[in-house]
Length: 247
Image 1 (cartoon, rainbow, N blue to C red):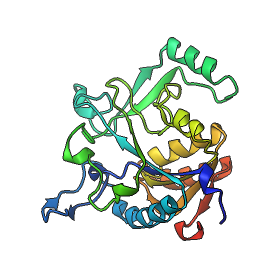
Image 2: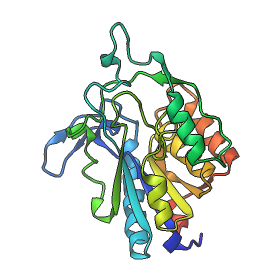
Image 3: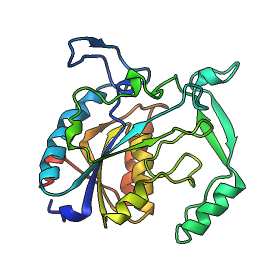
């Protein structure tokens, strides 16, 4: 597949220890399985590393997102009395945030929800912990910029573009526009959450969006969510390709 790499960016989504299985680190020490470990999550690293090296030499920007939660984040079951992992709570979206979104993005037709359904997760990717660090095998020397998300205590962030209220933006879209990027290649973790929401937002913001079929892995919670996510992304216009097909 031929692309204009001067207008293309690779986004590596959340390749962090808390989303990966156990492994031996570069220092020889054992890294335990992450608190939200994705089965075979580390399998996405090799194709991402190879592609990042290839694309960076062609002038393509390589970006990475990083979940970066405070210790008492609202998405943690431990932050709520008498709640357990997997429970769902409802969070109100502020009218101010919704109004600001429609003013900034008048052409986006996707409605912003008034209420968010928030799944409660194990404590993960807490700021400045080993769990939040990138996996040792990820070749960070090819990464041009890291975007952190989920750092606000009272709102989660799956997408690399917007918080879970679907209207509070990260800095990613503005950064890409300054670089005149119109095509995104997305891989990472997890297929049915952060990759999915990033891809869907990429499409609604007007980017040509490629998903790396050999460099994504999912949680599949609830069961079937990975297949549903893939179908939804394809139906919305995302193109699934192997990293080896991008030249």
